[in-house]
Image 1 (tube, rainbow, N blue to C red):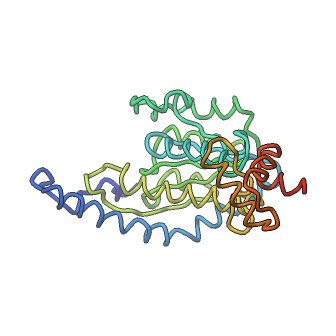
Image 2 (cartoon, rainbow, N blue to C red):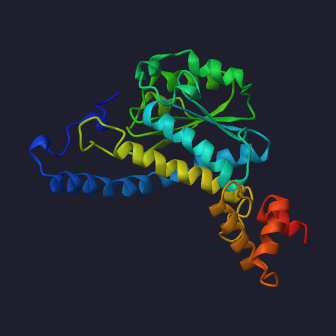
Image 3 (cartoon, helix red, strand yellow):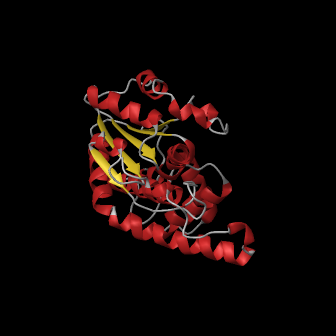
Length: 269
């Protein structure tokens, strides 16, 4: 692998001499380039999303595999997508070193484990119906690379989000996505621009897939879970907007709570 762009020296130096204003301006300036980098990778990302959509439509599952920032962001996505689109925790799952219970630990040495990721996938009965997507800024993380190699041997489709060109992980992926974010403001701190790009890609993957699977209508979250006052209020307002003949807030709230979602309440009309 050529010199990793994510490890190249920052465009800024003597950071310790900078004022607060200079530091934040520099970080913000670098962050502006992330959306441009993601935009260049959209054709690859679109191909990956289409592959994920097809497998989920056919009853398969999506597994994210990652360590550090990428793994934590991926795990967050699997949690949030459940409430936003009213799905359970089986459709999109995360594989993290040592298991999800280790998310708050800082023992990053576990990313060198070349057995744990595959064993976790086997424990969840991964099969050729599923697709496994790895997250690695460097494109070399052993935990992720090992999972994708095992998947390829087992005939399981793979994808990845990486931030360096021509990486081992991209070469092991059927649907590689290379988002070249370049040097970080603090040299090598890939939780910054690389991490931001991974979050953007995760948003696009889960949002696009759930829209394509029919979990959104118009531009509304009609299947969102009713788990707090804010979401219940939003659901009531969505229902009343879509069904203007119902103008009694309390009545609509009761209907939605009884049904469990806007969509289910509408099906009961």
